Image 1 (cartoon, helix red, strand yellow):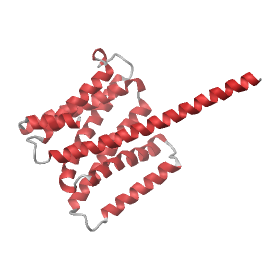
Image 2: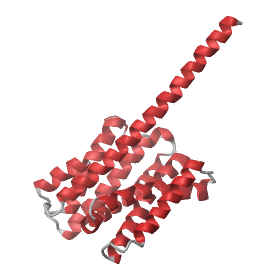
Image 3: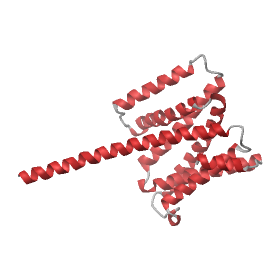
Length: 239
């Protein structure tokens, strides 16, 4: 009995260490996500007035993202004959649309509202909108911390929207538009998580970036934009 209790204690300790490890990893990835999002905003801010083609910069960004996703998947497995690949392609295409539109809107927001507000609204949209959709579509019950966080986020949006020192009404609407588009991109990830094969998560990202790239190329061809080396460099940094 003593030996059994000793083994149980060791097992319990291992489980606690595992949970602690997962929490630390989650926090680590959360910090990385915030840093990456902030760096993206700063790079796009620095690119203002220096580029020939903003869409060209976005296209270069998505080329890099596609390459990284393809590396994770493996060259011989980009379009697997796996059950559920069709819906994943469709969800990736829709998500790619939101990805491309959200970055275009972010470019305009940085130009009109600076760096801080677009970054804040982008993060808020990615948190609040998916939570609302999860409650409505998937009947998920938010945790107390999630509820408090969402209420505080909505209150902060109301405060900003009525702030007298803000510039123009059009600039405010750009912020809310980015809030929605960034939120919808996060919603598609939630839809994938709930309905698709989790083994295809990297493929979902690959198809998302591919769809966004195709949209960028279409805009470049339609507007007959000329892409400069500086556009490619900034695109690589953003990617």
